[in-house]
Image (cartoon, rainbow, N blue to C red; front, side, top):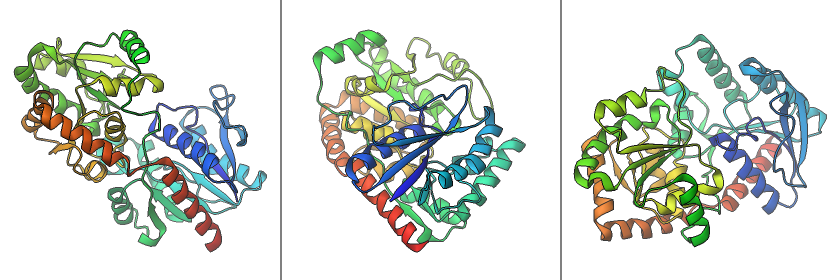
Length: 381
């Protein structure tokens, strides 16, 4: 079986789509012996080649212009043409951006419908047009993969795709996320980021649905209960602009009087993330909507208690291994954070539950279920 995979996000491992593409390819290549993979990527000034590609995986670049228009042209014309040129039997687009027409059957992974569900993400004409394009192309795909049953339900109802054509395949944390510490490495990472002795952690994106403003509001109660000893670390690339879907966080932090209790850590190297999780007292994930709550699972794999929300795409993944509260109830959010820090019995119970929960997810399982969809799609076609 020869599969061509759209590698648009391959060189962006700091994005969810980039992480998914890499982990899927690594594990398909490792566990599926009779599968040939060709990564097709946009060749331009920003992308002259792909990093860290397994030796047995082939690569094909397609001359592509930069910018949003170049991305659309690559998705709709460059990628399907390359699929024909390399002789692929199947095309896989690992994000919501499949072609309207393709010479081979197409499997598309739709992680979530955030840009469709939240109007703040589709106010501009270009966003509305792109949503319309990828919605139509998804309806024409041979099969749709998604990360959770919550997303599957959204796809069936909002895109009107038959249930038989949508399959849920859970993701998993990378094997690098582990509760086993390494004194020298942990000490080096602590020094690299100048981490305090004690802290609570958020690690992720900062767009509107991530609900960071509620976390900050909750932290006014945490600060009252814990004092100055447990600052909130905000890790991940800090937004450089303010807009309809990116709040003015600095102004809000100042308004709440949290300047001395919240610290921006900025971009974190992927290799350093397990240490940040392990060293945190609690990991906090306040999102209103997720296709798949991967950061909470990563934290659990590192033996860290998790406080998150009852949002369907999150609660489905964490089960009863985390403290989950309504994403709008900042007082309960604050109380849950305080409880995990002060009540050692509760924290230890969450650690054990988390470590057990994360055993239910593996990339080997993800790769096996994905290649089954590949085979069934080729057979039907």
